[in-house]
Length: 298
Length: 225
Image (tube, rainbow over all chains, first blue to last red; front, top):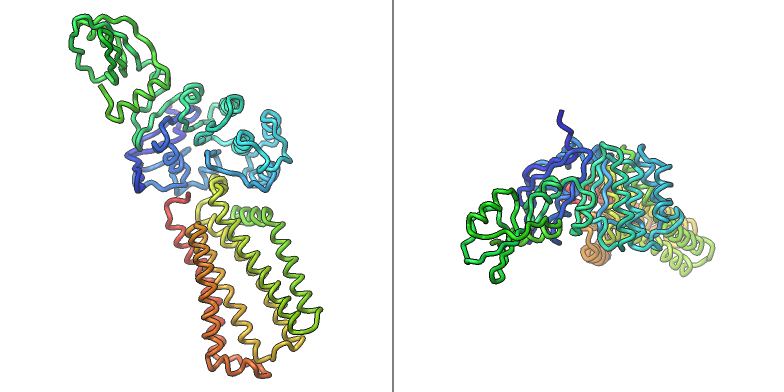
């Protein structure tokens, strides 16, 4: 039996004066973590806002936890915890005020878990929001989202601007939230380390387009850097997998996607000797993808 | 407006703004006290000015803090992440502002009328004119609130407030120079003719229709933030 989908976007488009979201397809199963990676202005926030029903798409369809968005957003949002980088709490009020407010709306609010999170995040209920540091504010917002025990967490750049310690705390708590196997996370970041750390699936976005969306392990397995020696200045084989080529004298570095052993054989048959084959970090994969999408390909 | 979430949003805004509402209410009470307890036209005028400032103050405060600043600071994203749609959000914002402003307006109007006529500061003939002036505040506020909710822009709201302030003065001058109104202002008896009724009904209707139109227009918006 198929696992139900947490999010299913089919062909969504959105036009702004200087930006266009083009035919975005995105889906992932419940109980998994999807990381959206892209440079600033790529369209990550727009996608998340369309998924939350805060921004309307011009075409395509969006289903979140089986609810059609934005028409069924009230039912859907009962099961979603959303945090955005530009979201703010009421500065003049305390954390307790916000907790009481959220508790009055969500029957699923877990007092015990909220108290645990307060302790874990070193927060006190009586603190006013205006007196909190950026990290504390993010943690307070995270607490409000987590303690209602949602089935889906949607986080737009949750770790931006946090120091390493606060970032680790936030990521750890995101991971803890996944102890319940039905819970899912969709989050955006331009920090590939965060994405690599907790995601099951990764989607790269650039200029309003999804340029690649795969299982994390497939992603990391699929990309390789080959260091080649080209003593006789042979022509490189014409492979569609090649994403980047750098040549320095007899040395040639090639980055390929969808790597398999046959690729190595193709280079060998073209008269090149393969010195080393290395895996790429997610950041390197991301940068290579962006460069290729920009038209800076081999 | 039977949805509990709308009540929760209204109650939330009232709680957040409880101190300023209380402070403006105290100013209003001071204005009433001055007009009522200190004899003479000067004291009555000062009292009414304080009272009018309190009602305008609370109105502007509520619009600024529940709509404009919420948009500027990003708290509306927090609210819209909750199980709320844009129609409910709009209804809640219009309701809480209208509730506070109309509440203060009733207090202000009752105090003005009572003090003015119980102390014979003005003749009874001015009662219809006074009611028309008081009622004129309602459509003005409704329009300003709706523009603010619709545009969520400080600039447009300020322009609307300034324009309406000038337009209201012109409008009231026009009314007082209508024969069927102006001719009876200094008389000893209030004259309730069809012109007076038509103007008053039109003012109330406009004040009520503007928020309804705003909700309809807002519901057609695709982008909330």
